[in-house]
Amino acid sequence: MKARVSEIDGTLSGEMELPVVFNTPIREDIIHKSYVNLLSHNFQKQGRYPNAGEVVSAESRNTGQGIARIARARGEGFPRAGQAAGVAGVRHGRVAHPPESWKNTYKKINKKENKYGLCSSIAATSNKELVERRGHKLGTIGGLPIIVSDDIESLVKTKDLKKALVSLGIGEDLQRVENSKSSSGTRRRRGRKGRSGKSVLIIVDENRKVLDLSGSIRGVDVKSIKDVSVLDTAPGSRPARLTIFSLGAIEKLKLLKLALHYTKEVSSSK
Image (cartoon, rainbow, N blue to C red; front, side, top):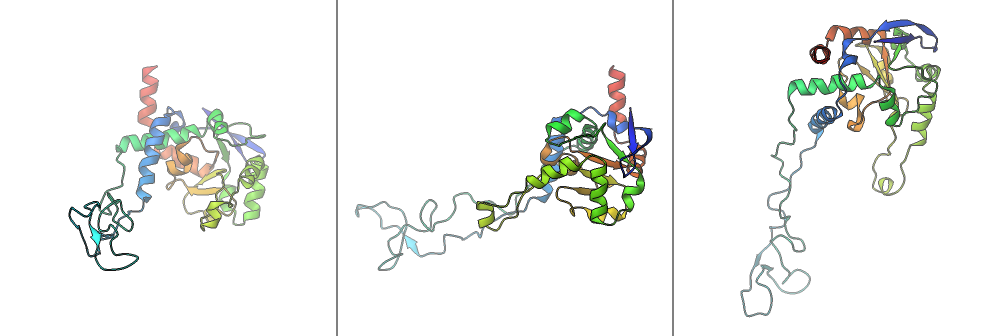
């Protein structure tokens, strides 16, 4: 399986053989399972004060009063005396089954299955149909995956990166993300961050200057090949994200041989 190699100005510079990881069968179910597993590592543990809703002097008035036998606050006068208190389902009462901070929120997944999910999500980036189904605007982009020379790794300014992306044919997708920005309504009234879509993911070699530009353009992320995960290649567990690989990142993928075991199984079954 071959792919075209381009310069950062959009000109074609040649072709190269893709690593074996791009031959991994695309399994959306495993991608989803791997995504949920990694996402669960960022869940914030929640809990409640154990005595919340029970710090009150209350007792039942027993029968014969024409009222329910539920515990009621002691004292005289309005507003608290005589109100139901200290139990679940009443005003200012405790929560019946509150979340516990000691519970383990991690989702479990097999190591091989998790690796297969990453390999499958990387292979999906070369599938044009899946990339378009996710909502990306490919415009004049010829083939996938997009492989660019290592010149992209030396960019240090946002304007230079944006110019390179437009030259590679991703300007239409950048505009799509810019139009998707939303920060109005209830979200804004309650102080939440605005949301916007995801555009291109740029995968480069380790310790490159362009990594500092991650997030400087709306929807554009830059990741090192050793740090990339399903959270990056399939946001929301939906494959496949529009992705740019540098030549250095492709060479590292060849050395990793991530999907060699799975591709051998597929070729032998045929």
